[in-house]
Length: 156
Image (cartoon, rainbow, N blue to C red; front, side, top):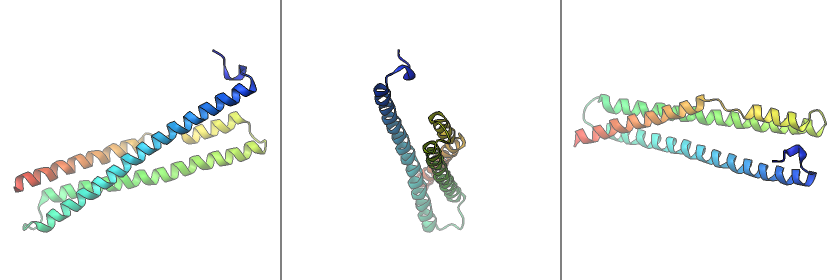
């Protein structure tokens, strides 16, 4: 197999274009699936909280513990989703800024293409904690839904 630096300039351009196109497609697919997951968690937590509040409004007892726990779980889940959304705003802003600033330095001949790509790759490195927060939010959703289901089946 021929290495990139062994290709002719036209072949390098073609190869770079193909890799860049695939990178953009992979990034777009990843971002859209992450956004869909975050939106799902937001909507289901909000819907669960509304359902529990409606249930609380229709109960005759003073302060039933089960619905309050479910409401707390849905509320914590919503807060966790907000944390993830805030992180994403800052992460993608920082990543975009790294590329724009690096490209500016590259065009002013302050850095080479390898350094530009290194800086962007460094800015693109995602921490693991947002994924943990997302799964914690999902766990809150599951627990809140189980409590809500038990409330409905016990009340019937």
